[in-house]
Length: 321
View 1 (cartoon, rainbow, N blue to C red):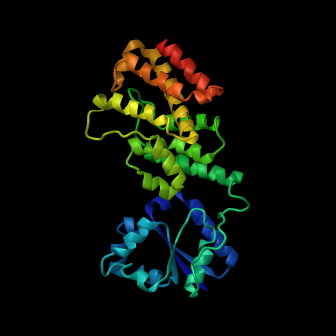
View 2 (view 1 turned 135 degrees about the vertical axis):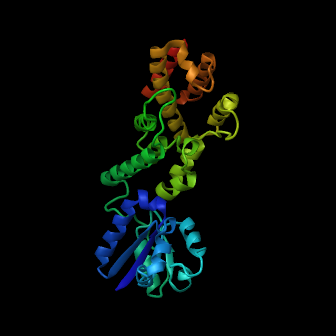
View 3 (view 1 turned 180 degrees about the vertical axis):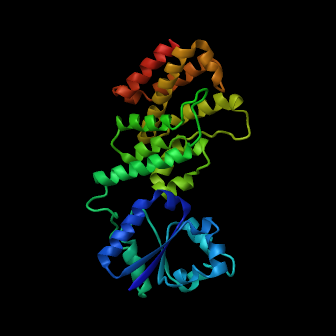
């Protein structure tokens, strides 16, 4: 019987229940593997409390091998102080890093525990039969929705009491009309997270993979923290416009979905409040907003045959003439 300890960072604890289920399914299939999960252990007072009464030492010592969620978690383990539960643990216990797309990670860990190699075999997803199954796509989207809701918790749309999460969700729904690629759809839901929340690209990558994190980064503005948002508005918008020419079609899909969602809100707000509507923004001149949206729409004219682009163009005409 092989005992595998699974050390998961806070990102994986919150958003990777599918990985936990996958490991459990693999262990059940093998029948000779015990799993011990240590979720978020280094991000809490678990370690210090456990050392005081010794109740966790035995659980750690039982592990023949560790699966570690990511590089950040590995570095934290290597930097553990003397006399903590995990001090020097990796000097005498083998480990393997977890990968989102490596279904054979449990087999590799068990091979390590038995003195074999950790070289990857054929990579496959945890969930049979295929990676893009309907069940997995639904689970991924639900997990992404939970992440976005947590990231934007407490935020509201500018000048209103509408929860901000409405905008990312609408952006993702618009993206669904333009692509079937779930990475793009999830990145559309995450497009404001790096700009406007405490979550970083690294945390997105840890929880959802490098491709989604890169898409979000490419769609994010440089907010120029510490400078006046009203003074940098034109600079930031010009940078976004100039950057569109270099962006991939995937990123442009997110840009179109984002701008259409914003224009829907702009149209509704302008109809309700008239010219006073513009006072809620960092840039208070209507003509500047018109310049920005018209220019972006022109840059995205490759999508002019889509309903999304046509609606964006129509709303720009209705608001700005």
